[in-house]
Image 1 (tube, one colour):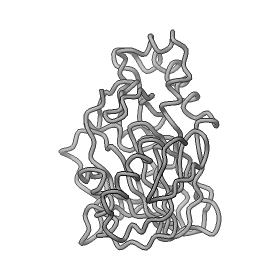
Image 2: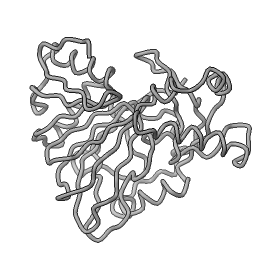
Image 3: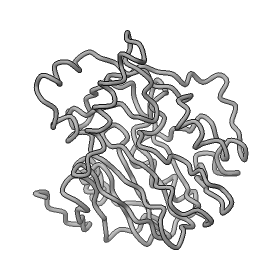
Image 4: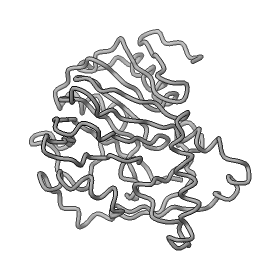
Length: 281
């Protein structure tokens, strides 16, 4: 990393994506100089991890507001007294976890979230890691011919794609939210341009993208399956092992994630805040 940080310590997790940030207490209001450096690291590394934090829900929300307006999750109500915070839970008797496949959060909304903040409250004694992947690098790896082919193509994303829909069933049963007035199907460019960095990123996912606009599902499948394989290449990713008090901040516009489901019989409790986004272009 070439950038010099005076107020925080930024240690990259892999060459491709992710960094552990030390030297900051997120429970306190952040000084402008500290926030500027966190913002720079965020846009450079796409996902940041802060260890050993102790955050009440209102402190988690305050930290998230440094990065934009608070968004929402359409299917699950927030915590009592803290509606901005959604509890992401897998109970001891459950075998399905929330978000257990490669995706960007709620890409089926007209304005998908810009980012997410996740805080670990209770973690299993082993397992439960989260994988992240850099979609800038996924796009950059494509041939010039493939890049030309993708220009102007839009992927149709739906909340009803079965593999993703099943992962939210338990939490919807616990705290259902009325999403009847929310449109949960949206078409977005397969390649989107980040509004801050100006870089291009692949923007589709096996979890939510059903087909390419103007094509049938069968016609779309070969191209989309190829793009998914590119997105999930090991050299584009990193792996986070959660410990209690870990906070992750990631950019949904240029990174994907996958919550591993390898801890049956153990409780996992996380608090999530969603950052409002813009229409992808």
